Length: 192
Ligand code: HEC
Image: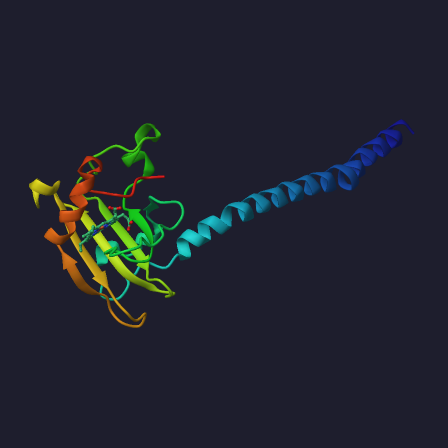
């Protein structure tokens, strides 16, 4: 009688395990798994976006080193509006640089000069147009032009979104005007 009673208790314990604890464990595991899945899902969109991001391709006619410039640091917040009267860079403009905010503005304040290797790109959408018609580039190349802070200037334009950009002007005509802002390393637009 005594041992049968024990048997019963054992059985009871085992079935409690089977009916109660194991499903409970499975349930918690399931919840954990779900949580994990949610976390993974939350983390994923960013990951897949980066992974599937198309490799940058330069606009037709532009050099490869400015491919993907639209993903660089943008100096201006709002597009820079057209300026009345003989503006050589007519249109709504954005200015980008291939540097990080930390590099050009440590302590939240922009510092000059720009480091060697910097590339500044300005794009302009011409008035009443819906495509980029002008790309102006400044490249900082050590030793290239010590009299003008070693910037190389070149500008490309196109009048048709299906056409290639071609060189409009470069060099003297550019720094002749940009020298006005020598104190900000020949760059008019400051980081906002
Ligand atoms: C008559 C003056 C003038 C001339 C000439 C000129 N620029 Fe500019 N440039 C400006 C001004 C002003 C800005 C500031 C943004 C704006 O208002 O478009 C600017 C902006 C730029 C920028 C963006 C960085 C910055 O300085 O803000 C680049 C790049 C640039 N110019 C390249 C060129 C190149 C290349 C040429 C020659 C083909 C050239 N510029 C000729 C006046 C000039």
